[in-house]
Length: 177
Ligand code: ITT
Image (cartoon, rainbow, N blue to C red; front, top):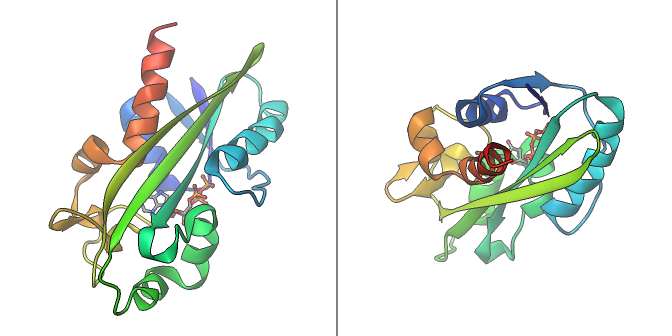
């Protein structure tokens, strides 16, 4: 059993489908202002590992838009809460380059072991309109091929997503110990 520290139910459901025995812990942790998801995750893990017993993991994710020089990136949670998907579409008005990617960094620790981290990415495009009701966050505006992530069921998103990549890498590592 692994404690997954996250406030995000959608993340928990997607990660659980890959890792199995996960318990969501919505206990919060300090997300520092840093240039990379790895730094945010590693710093958060120091706090979380000190507060919880046993195996624990957390994940930091972000959307990186090429035409916006990687914005919102490490600021993705704040941007989603403030200007949201409509705000990103507005920033992208008149932009021909729609390329973007999601990145996920998962950090795992247990007593007596240092933190290990794994990452995953999915590359796609920012659409011209939101589509779909599944998933969460930026899913309705992020397209892989003709479909937004919010149009895909969990199984399909979990075949291609950034989170599926990082969680599968963690699973492989856990299984090989
Ligand atoms: P935590 O408690 O785990 O930090 P969070 O939702 O704040 O939950 P992040 O900081 O990792 O998670 O996520 C940054 C933002 O990117 C946040 O607004 C998410 O909704 C969004 N996001 C992350 N993964 C996503 C995905 O698979 N699809 C769409 N949006 C995603």
